[in-house]
Length: 76
Length: 424
Image 1 (cartoon, rainbow over the protein chains, first blue to last red):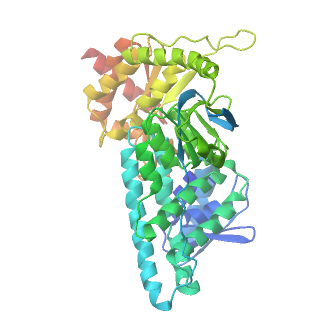
Image 2: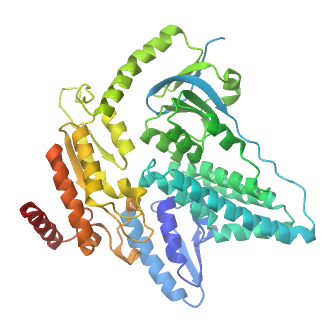
Image 3: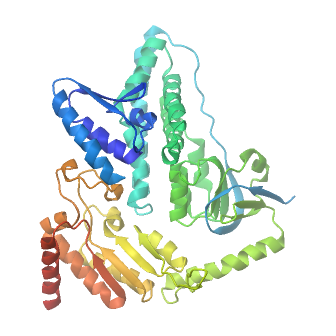
């Protein structure tokens, strides 16, 4: 994930009150942090896990997952 | 003095003759001592002030480069702002101050180093190059923590003029943009100017010769000496022989003359037509985001302009300029390129903060529409832009294109606008 799509993703994740993380392998980063996401080194085909916790967690997971599947594909 | 040749990675083509000007890294002093509990709050305040100062610095720089850099290059500043806006990152720094009793400077450098190490390990070349931007952010923050002492580099950059070849220890995008603005003869960097760095992108798009990977310590003693730089071969030669200067000048004097002619707008640049080894003629077209890029592209003898990103041309204006201004720009491009085809795309604006160059086409992403859809919602603006383009077409081979069309109705609608303009 390059800095532009990553920044877009963060904007989206920051809309939710819940804490959101992305986990790749053994590392986990705050999904609202650009540096965190860049440091995970997510590339095309990387397996990642999206975790949300808080009052709007279900909505956050749903929307962000959709974005990762559709939005990022279009940007590649 | 002795002649010496330095070799580096060629990252931006072109050649230049000038005097060596050295920019060495301004050393950042970090207070390694642990702080007292009573100082924690002060250090956190210092950190917050430093973030604000750095923000203002970036905004000011960003303003200063408007019109020089294209929209895509301006993304560089967005990246800086996004880092400064990263709350998790600053929480981590604050925690180091609170829990480890680090000074604000030490906390910043420790924290950013962790990210730099992780990002350096990435196998994505583009992301790897962001390390230089991060280093620059860290330096700016640390400088601003320690009371915003004057930056030696900024002072030095003020002294630079267009007759110099600048040798720099670590090239940052911001120094690169400053050098582009000064129109220096060339840039040789020890690091920070790799092919995928923001810095080298800026130098390429502004047509400044550059090489990366030279050793600044070896060049330092040649400060002020005459030199030649060849960005195609990746060489910098200090105290070159007269013959070398002549050879380079023979190549570049023709270019300089043509540049002059280009400015008069009368003579176009003549180069051998581009063709494959077996003689098949190919057209090379440039997509441009600024008048500066247009001039650089034209000097290369391209076959036409594949795309004029009008929204980027207008970055200087708060809103889309009126028909007359647009007409002046478009007709200048059409005239200057002397009959070669030019495709002008109507403004692709919209999507809140999403820059057009982002390439993300997700309608749900932004609530506002963009591309031709947005233009059709702002019809007055669109009509005056189309009229300006059609008027400019008198001066050359001008075509019009529309961004992000997603239905036949949109085409029918713009065609009817064109028809109406023709009638009037």
